[in-house]
Length: 184
Image 1 (spheres, rainbow, N blue to C red):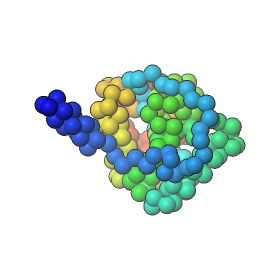
Image 2 (cartoon, one colour; image 1 turned 45 degrees about the vertical axis):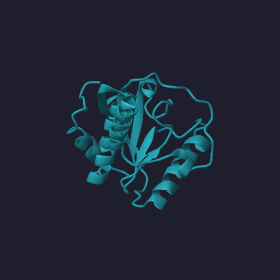
Image 3 (tube, rainbow, N blue to C red; image 1 turned 120 degrees about the vertical axis):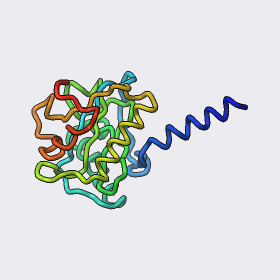
Image 4 (cartoon, rainbow, N blue to C red; image 1 turned 90 degrees about the horizontal axis):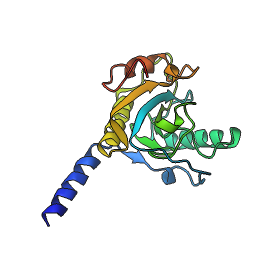
């Protein structure tokens, strides 16, 4: 009986470190295609921005995420939305392809990272503290669950591919995170 109490306590502490994650089935009824799985623990988190209008409610964020999914699957022919998770202006985390499924967010890094994309354009505007907190809490959640390495390295997409992502302002903001590395 003691082990059950320890298990429940450990489970509660893990759950307490996780942000509110809106599951894929809560924002889309379209199934994903073929799946490649990542090998855990995952060493990198790559930060992007969607360069779409922002969203500040669950309803508008859900619509925005499903529109991005449609664009990725219908226009690019991908098997799923390219990002692992998306951060809404409402402070929620929207599950894309999730923790262990390979995304299509950063060529050369898709097999060894999750991609977190902030919904909006953060070239000339800071991401809100609510969004930053949700993303950082998501990273802590992944580390506590053993999906991300305990020494996971956070990078901006621009550090490893030719892109402006995650936008100049957001790129400056993530450099304050303890997991950020300048040389991936």
